Image (cartoon, rainbow, N blue to C red):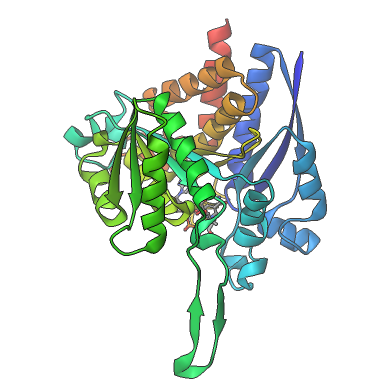
Length: 366
Ligand SMILES: NC(=O)c1ccc[n+]([C@@H]2O[C@H](COP(=O)([O-])OP(=O)(O)OC[C@H]3O[C@@H](n4cnc5c(N)ncnc54)[C@H](O)[C@@H]3O)[C@@H](O)[C@H]2O)c1
Ligand SMILES: CC(C)[C@H](C(=O)O)[C@@H](O)C(=O)O
Ligand SMILES: [Mg+2]
């Protein structure tokens, strides 16, 4: 029986609620595919600040280092918003983990499944046009990490600055991730930049063009970020892989999530060149709905599926989860945020959705 060691970091807000459902799904997968998942839970984010004094305690980092993969929930919330930036859960825990493990390649797939167009807020004909986009986001550099950053001066002269910085090597490796992904999909990369204004984008374009020469079967297009945000809504079917810097990918991936119907549907994989990964929903701790048992657990469940596929090479198990998610949506077992205004009957709870996914996985076995 194959055994995998997973560091489970549920975090804050809806994190623990949706993680409970992903854990149930992993139990069902373990039983159906004769796998063993050793799951060790560690404190992270605001919860870790409250209980251990820091957002990423040493035991949490050590647990992640010892694991085969990290399954991450979400962190942050109003309670910790007034802390200095470097102590906040977002930077002290999540960005530190991304940087520590060199998780430069962030994959965020957004798809409108045939038959599930009604979940999308897009106009029906656009939603039906075949939307299947993979955002490939650079995750360990750019304006999130560039130095110097700071705040100086006083009064009207006070100023603040961040640095958008990319090396040729950093652009090259994320571009390769995008071209590799496109080669396994529909052979198109759209590189998103602001090359009409930013020097980093000029280099980004140049390097992307060079990498493209190694992938003659893949078409490369360039688009400015402002136009990209508009085109994603107008004609999403034109996109296959969208290659983005750290900040642009953050923005576009929320938009792509919403295209499918909810932030609660978008899973993500953040990987390094050795195949080690952190898997998390692209959305956050959703303080507005936390604690009510109504968050959508699908992004967390699909993140677990990505972990099985990319870190453990268990494609059949990952496929089984994805089929079960689609079946659950098709059966209209929908959390509140996915329902049409005026829908009759009760919305599904977080638990109802997790149970439906589990039942589907186990029913396929019987
Ligand atoms: N990876 C992470 O841990 C992560 C990601 C994004 C934001 N954050 C943090 O989360 C906190 C809240 O941020 P925000 O409000 O800007 O973004 P958010 O993604 O938490 O929420 C945005 C909207 O999407 C909804 N939403 C998100 N996930 C959902 C789900 N699973 N089911 C149903 N609805 C869902 C929320 O209810 C909210 O209306 C902040 O502290 C932010 O820094 C963390
Ligand atoms: C919480 C925050 C630091 C994070 C980001 O900006 O990368 C989040 O928005 C995401 O998309 O994963
Ligand atoms: Mg984001």
